[in-house]
Image (tube, rainbow, N blue to C red; front, side, top):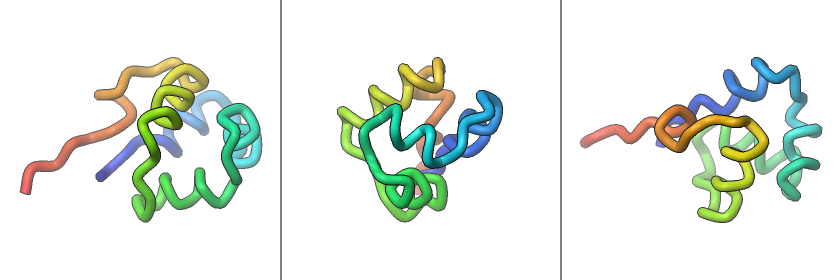
Length: 65
């Protein structure tokens, strides 16, 4: 699933490490989500939305196949 995590993170001047600390995951997890290699759990998605102050539709882009 495509996402705009890196863009939102950069807009808030947050490093991967800082975002990881705010959401309770590792920096590697944030990196994997940004690269589209890992789909976050629902609970992590809600933490990301809160920290990044954006909506689900803004953060994740559903692609029809």
